[in-house]
Length: 118
Image 1 (cartoon, rainbow, N blue to C red):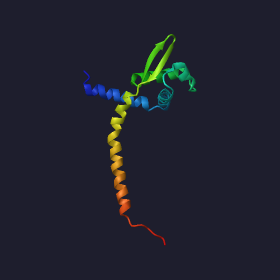
Image 2 (cartoon, rainbow, N blue to C red):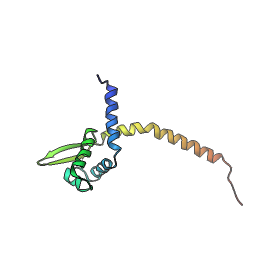
Image 3 (cartoon, rainbow, N blue to C red):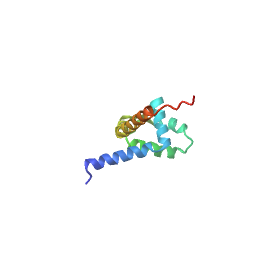
Image 4 (tube, rainbow, N blue to C red):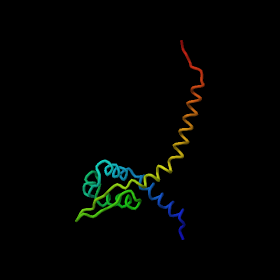
């Protein structure tokens, strides 16, 4: 039986796996910049077979990064940015770590005597 933390980890794994692929990140960028798009319009932006792009859209949908709405024969995809907050939350401690390191480096450099060649 899966616990809540196991489900959360599985969801995070899907999210990070979806973001690990450059094509999927480009699809997200397109949706962010141009708004909801039909699958065909998205596919036209890539040099790949439509079934391959459909697989990328499926991964994004399963990760919660896009939603799909049917409009007649078309499937319209929309960016769902909320899961990206989970990525930001995960990265925040690392950002704080590097900021502290760089502040420390700055203090060391400020304490070093200037090398005046004159």
